[in-house]
Amino acid sequence: MLDFDKLAAKNILVIGDVILDKFYYGKVTRFTPDAPVPIIKTEKILNSPGGAGNVANNIASLGANATVIGFTGTDYHYHDIKQSLEKMDINALLIQTQNPTITKANIIGENADGETQKMFRLDTECTDYEETDYKQLISTIEENISTADAVIISDYQKGVCTTEVCKMIIHTCKENNIPVLVDPKGKDWRKYTGATLIKPNLKELSVISDKAITESPEDVVNFGKKVRSTYNLSHLVVSQSSQGVLCISENGHFNLAASATDVKDVIGAGDAMIATLGCCLAIQMNIREAAEIANHSSGIVVEKVGTVPIRKTDLELSAYKTNTKLIKDLDAFVSNIKDKYNKIVFTNGCFDIIHKGHLTHLKQARAYGDVLIIGLNSDASVKKLRGKNRPINTFEDRRDVLAGFEFVDFVVEFDDETPLELIKAIRPDVLVKGGNYTTDEVVGKEFAQETQILPLLEGYSTNEIIKTMTEE
Image (cartoon, rainbow, N blue to C red; front, side, top):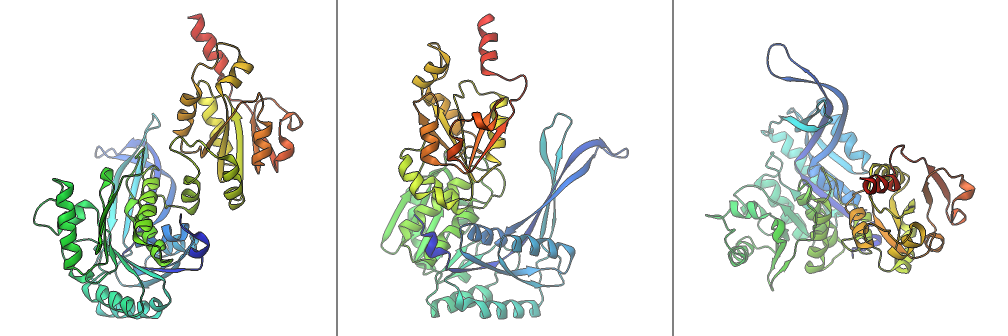
């Protein structure tokens, strides 16, 4: 497990191509009269740091002190990216140039049926920078590199990571005994020679080969060993999607199985992995431990939709739950996790046949805090409450359905008719109950900081669903 207390005192410097990701959300209202082009009425605009900015965002989310150095323009998009980075508590040392800020504008429309899709993307970039820009870039790097505990070169081939810049960074890091990690792009890796670690995916590794190297695991290992030796690297860490991670070092190699179980979106997985590797090496973890944690980080990120940074809460929580999100050891959870979060939310139920009312209740409950724990009645408990013909679905089935929702963090089983003992053990910050109750009627309210009553969604009831099914 990553030592977050140690990490909080570490400074990690990210140098590379800073990109502004803009998202325009709106509804398709009609088409233009002069062409079959949809008109989208913009309802929401979101800005997010991309490229090297997203790497820094991941580092800050893990709790380290993140600084990012890169180029931007003097346009209004500069203020957007600067504000986005500083909002994440990232020290943004952005060199303003005469080129526009590199921007990817994503236009996302919603049709009359409520379905959303990306309509198109508008990119703005110019990567030919002036000599004076590079002089200022190198000067800024020199002023900040000596205080870093790790340096990450985030190369998106947008102009920052030239041969001169990369060689200067690696040379300075070697002189100061600072680990330098590279997320590479392109065919020419000579500029990365001497780095501590390079983290390509399989496609990026294939680019510097004369042929695709996806035929067999043996091909990847053999070529990887050659690459590590050629570029004088301490470690080569290759992410291989569903095939997991391969790490090659001077003393040998090892493989790690992919950790993701439900891949939803691979965007941002590489940034999460290089950021986590940088954090691990900054506190001097060995390469196997670092690779295991980084593999786990990327696995968590791909299970979420969109560019979402890995958070320290994600890693901390994952140590206490299985793929089913079932808390195995409640005492260990309470003693090690509870005090680390501002608000733990607890709710409970049988959740025998999941319907829209349940989803509404759980989403609203999750919004009250940082972690949502569901107390789930055991099969025996459901029988006591609902009769001998219940539950319709077994505990394992009900648990697995709940575990499939992103807004559910943990499930814990209880055998009693009420969750009183469970609430007493967890002592949640927020106790949420659905139904026509008053606060005084809620079981366990005395062990929670606050109690919230959520009204039932009219027209949705498990009992009514069962009644309808049996009548037919």
